[in-house]
Each structure stands twice: as structure tokens, then as C-alpha cells.
Length: 438
Image 1 (cartoon, rainbow, N blue to C red):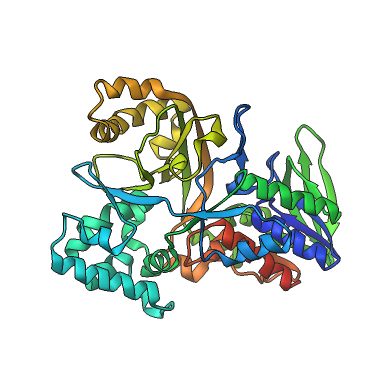
Image 2 (cartoon, one colour; image 1 turned 90 degrees about the vertical axis):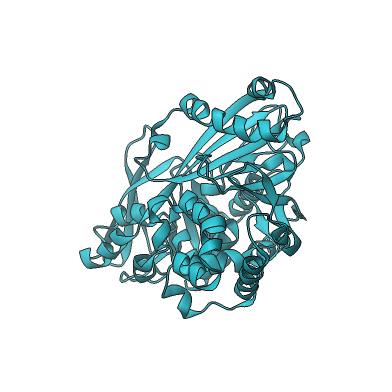
């Protein structure tokens, strides 16, 4: 049968691979010129490896992508144990990798540490329970760990990640974060784009038709066929009929394209879903922004950044021309002032805050503030729409599922990774699951 896969991210590529193995005739429609979706990478002339526009890593228990990589003959995944830490009001960076690190935190007394540690251990070992969907993360943490733990450890992290929505995020989110995390983190030789390119090459060998720079404008149903209408850049519209459609597009985009397919009642529930958009600022510099830490959570109001990821404290700088790479990340509403800034304005906005952090770390060096600004050789920005769904009660009631009211029209997008955060592992899992249904 002829199958249209909407979206050339890892979910779409995986679905296309599995469907072609089942002897379906598959066409992928991707709006961007490059495959990869939110995992897409870029490369500078003096770099050996690609770099993701938004920070990525794997967990040791990301079995779906690990197994799939072996299945297709891709053997370039490796694991290391970089340091993760949190930055608090006194601008001190505290490692947060082990129970001993937690016990060393100076902001909590022994009772609160024991209480919080016990709950974290329970979350790590607990299966998913319905009670996690009956209360918010704030309510759960205050009840189980105590108000002090919420204020000193969690409150600012939730505000940084979810903004105005921080108070309505279900406890299922905090369960998934703790349950999933591993000390060992994985990466891919050449960057995640090397995995994407390898998979795309496999698809070519399987005669999958991959259309990049193609924007789908409309989907209509004619008898038992779906008519996909769209165009390449600067080209006239074209149409093609398919027996089956698999949409891996973000739910709001899919909803706009399917007004001629689905009823208003069905599409109305998707309008109740809320999202934040991803913004990353990537700094390329001669010296590292963080001494040892790979992943730094910002747990203070003083610094208006969600987190800093010093990529080259995980992956060797030799792969990026000998320069260090650091990500600054946010999840924001579309109308947020940071989303409206141009690249230079965003860099100017964060520099005073970075100076506070890095002068504190490198105080032994004179005039480090000036030196640090001079260390930055290049910077890049990325804006990803609908990157962070808001896991509230409305989300649980209205999130999409694989099966839709229209026969042979399927959905497999990253909203369906709930309660886990989005990631390449679940993108692979969704692609395989939807292919099994066809």
C-alpha cells in the first residue's frame, strides 16, 4: 500500500524504515531541507562532527534506540558519565550525581535530606501510579518531601522549565524525570545527525521516496484515498493520493492540515493542549564556560537562564576545531521577549549573567570578565516550535493517540511520549509502534 509519512524527524524516519520492511510503498514529506526534526545538526568547516541545534544525549536505559541502531547496523553509540550539577543563590555549583552529593548540600538540614532522599528513592523504584495524575508536582513534593525542599530545590527549576505553568504540572512529570534518569549518558560519534544520515541512506536503499523542502498545505479524503497537496520551494503545487497517512507533525500543525479530514469535535480537544517553544543559544569559545560540569541546572532567580549545557565537558573539543561548545536553553511562550530578540540582542542579554557565574568560578584570573567575552568566537541560535508540552490535567485528557476517527490515518508524535520528556529514544519507539499497527 502507498503510505505518506508526514515529518522527517526520527519518528518519521523510523516509521518509514519499518513500513518499507513490510513492503509498503512509502513517501516522507519534510518541510525542512534537512532531515532530523528537533534532533537536526549542523557543522562548521573546521569541525569533524555535527552538533545538534538543541542539546541531546541518551540515557543508559534508552533501550529502544539502542536496539534499533543495532538492528540497522549502526554501531556508533557510546556512553560516559559526565558531571551534572545545580547553581544556587550564592552562585556556588554543587554536583548532584550521587546520594553523597545530595548529603553534602549546605542548604538543607539532615532531616530534610533524609526525607527528600527517601522520596526520590521511592520515585526511582516505583512503577507509574494513578496518584501521580491526581495532583500537581508542587502538591506532591510539598506533601512528601516538605515545603522547605520544594522552595530550595524544586520551585525555581519548575519556574525555569514551565514558566507560568509551573504550578499545574502533574506529579507524573516528576516521577518520570526521576525514574528515567541514569548517571551514564550516551552520545553518537559524529553527532545525532550521523545517525539520521545513516538511517536516510538505509531508506534510499529500501526505495523510500524522501521529499525534503516540501511543505504540505492540505490533506483531503477522496473515497478511500488521502490526497496530499503541497509544494517544493518556489515550485507549483502538486498532489498525490495515498492509502495510509502517518502524521508525526506537532499536534497543532497536524490539526490545521486536517480540518477536511476530522470533525470539529475531534480537533477541538487538541486546542486545549498548551506548549512552550524551545530557544537555545550556542556559544563557541576558546575556553570552557564551566570548569567540570556538563549539565547545570540554574536554581536561582538571579540568573534568567533555564540551564547551561557544557557540551565539551562531555564530548571532546577536538571534534569542534579545538573550541568549546556550551548551550544556553529556555522553554518560552511565543510572545516572550527573548523569542523576539535577534541573535546579537540575545547574546548581549545573557552576557552580564554569564559573567557572574564564570567570574565566580575563575576568580583567580584577573579581568576574566573581559577575557571571557573575547573568548567567544561564534554563536548560534535555534528556535523549536511546540517543543515542550504542558503536562497538566487537560493534556492527559486531550493528548493524541495512534488511532484516529479517520480510517488509515495515524498519529505518532512526541506528545505521546507522556509522562516522559521528549527524546530520540521515544521517537524511535513511536515510529516502530505505529508501523506495527499498519
